[in-house]
Length: 341
Length: 205
Image (cartoon, rainbow over all chains, first blue to last red):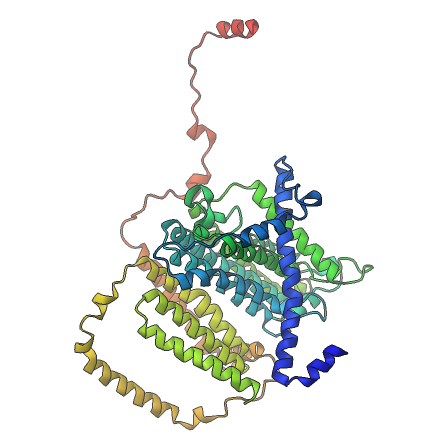
């Protein structure tokens, strides 16, 4: 009641702004917590895969480790390299994390639970993720360091290349769903596990997921920060909280691309079988399942060579996606079109 | 002043400011970044006109792809702005003449009644993306396809330009790399060691 009173007394501009900020907080704060625990989970999972224990000292089973890490990074000094462009140096982490959070505005968590239900939601997400490359480029250039610069060039080339394949896979999804709205894409998959778009678009799903790994600069596509070649790539000169922001953005992007894969190919919040109720739990389970693959890849695969990455993106993924788009378009004109809707 | 005008003036101010900074800033990379900012604020203005598809396409194509490649090139080359700015005042009369002509042309065009429609029109009933798609593939199908073919020609021409001449790099064809077998790389040599000796050694240990 008190809240309502406050809202009615304020002028309209302030009440809308305040209400929107509250809704944004309701998305961002759980996201930050999941990012923190994704780092913990990653270290534990990779630890077990490699026959180690991982962090297990701070709190029960090491559960307070992310908080200890965050505190440590917060109290570290941020060092500015000599002759670096100070403003751009500090702007770069902001430009990396802002799109990673902004894209969440159109993600539907449930049939009604969405911050902004715009028609061109899928395009919006694609646009936001394509902006994220600026943070990397600016970080590399503003650091005034050769390693950072090489890392940022590698990363920019890689992100631009894989974005094309990723965009084409999304074209396949929107052909099936007949809509750019993420909520409608999910609703188009209702009717049990067999109606999910993963089945008619299976090659596109695989390509989307691999491109997502490349897009987020994760192993085995992490040449942008390949420790053995260019130290830590574009964020080699960053320390303290500025480094932590890059870290947060990387993990937030991982969760975002897994969320998109779950929404577009795995039926979002819909339950796989008719006798279970739909709900946000299903979405979170699917996202967690996909995130596990990210960790599994990192523990398993050796790093790609740079020219192999480019070859995979341009000469293998893009032709396959174009072929599958034409195939889907062709099948939609035949009596089998029900399979593709 | 209602909410949308506040937003309009905010975005317009950023747009004009960054557009001026594009030509005045001394560092070419800063110029490119200001150009990105002006594209972004232009996209914001389009969103205000409820042209969501155009706004997002502007961000996706110009901000997300074109300017990234631009920045890429600018970062790689070493531009000395002092040398480039030499003789600016000698060229100034010519520059001024050209810009005055361009300004009058723009004013003449913008005075046409076509551009005098009220800016904020009602939202279309269908979604913006649908409307554009329908028009492109029905009324404007021929120009649209011609544009696609011109683009295809441009793509092929760009690739042909970079591929002509002798092969300059020493890269190996990946198909050959993949099809390599163990017998191509590894050669087992019989060193002629006395096998009975080894057997004795094994027995002793």
